Length: 426
Image (cartoon, helix red, strand yellow):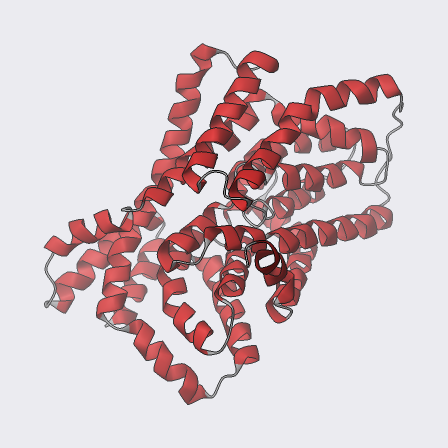
């Protein structure tokens, strides 16, 4: 029966239905066909899916990213990075990676980071002679770093549904996120010389540098405030998300004066709608989790793994393949929320650290944002660059493969993920 549930879900998604609606309809149809469950549990399980105070942090992190974009802070960070690396071949591509790493410390969302950085960097890259496919590809690949480096909205999801320390998950993403940035920079170095992208002559004077540092100082402090608060327990996750919004609001209105008070209702409304789109998925996933528990899918997998005689190596390989494929078919959020709690007990049984397992699952699904047919980042970058979807898919594969290399390293060298959490939080 559980196979019927997912078959109905895939069929509804395939005909173009929104993921949350497809999940809700398939869940209700499953209950009607199954006949032993009451429809009254639909409402209660959906409420249970969003019944967590930690989830309050998600709308605030989304709002923080939106405020950074609207206030011009992303432009200031781009100009500062461009000062140092803009003259190199592929200089603006390096800028895209560097700024995404910095912005990742505020929003925790790949889509938010892509919207903020790509809308600034891609038009500039096109003006300087980069081809559209390369510009859109590197910006899309760099945006994947956003949910890996803390704070991370997907890792909040993982922590809420599994009980794993969110602080440990955040710290576990630091090294993998930086490795992703590093391998993208290496790929830019190779491709830029092979394609002979133009260099840009810029004056390097101390006056310009002082101005850029002065303009960017408060923007650079935002991720530091967030990371310090979370890692050292100064404030809770929800409190630090609110603090991030207040800080960015303050510098945007009173320091940079790039946002007016009358602009706030429109910005708040945009963030609220985006947040609602995520939270409604959480609600319908609550229904799916109830059905999965009722069908004892976790117990079935727990019996299947020993029967297949899988060791830790093969289990992790199959998990990576599974989540990469699911990321091609479905949105990352429901895949994570449905299947992570089911697979976690088996991972623990095989001696896999829960933090390590959580981080590599998030990495898998974020890379899935770059894969057709569902890849959200592909559609976003293609729209910003005014580029055909098929051309972007052909152009992005070197960067996607590079990110998969980092994924495999972090999968089979657990210390890359667990060292910082164990060092700082024990």
